[in-house]
Image (cartoon, rainbow over all chains, first blue to last red):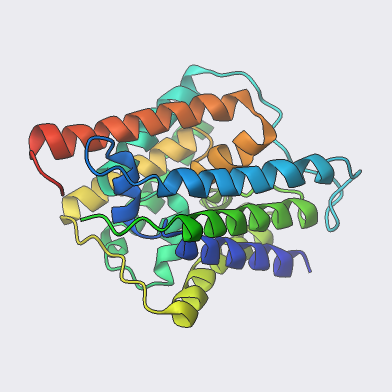
Length: 136
Length: 144
């Protein structure tokens, strides 16, 4: 049941990415390019997603536990440290380079996006390599 | 060339993403951060694989269902392979080191009012905009 709900969440998330246009790197780059014909779409996507989540979150976390698990697994860390900022900067550089963040990459597999022949293995390698660094 | 601005699709799609993230929270009790969930499979840890794999497999399925129902989405940018490879490496390393991406920090983190996520979002947005500005307007002098 846990797997079914996680899959359903992924399914809706992927459909949302496709619907919102965020699976299209040109649209993402249109938002990131503030100097020319700025496309505010990504801002609306973020506001829609974040607003919905913010409202629901307040009700959900009042429950003693989630429906299918013993406890909520929420990040407890609140400190802003150098590692967070460095990682965010590296991610931002890569995001701006091609217009892909992880959600649209994985969803894009279902759209047969040819860019992913190059980008997906590189992203997986990046995850794997940095997991090894961080464990040291 | 950027596609035409479609505000209702952006807002509707965004709300669906928010609902999907809430569903994961209500049922499994997890933050719907795509990079965290997927990278947690590399390497896989025993007893922590099923829900991650299920969510990750749902993403392309959902996009495919949407594309089949609404019409073909042709989205490849056909950028040069070196650019796609470098972008993939930076996105992979950066999201792992920075503990999240647009979904984990952006949607869920901001929605929860996390100061860490706010800092991360401001940094990756600013650097991404700067990266695009340098590439499109300082180096090439045109849209690419």
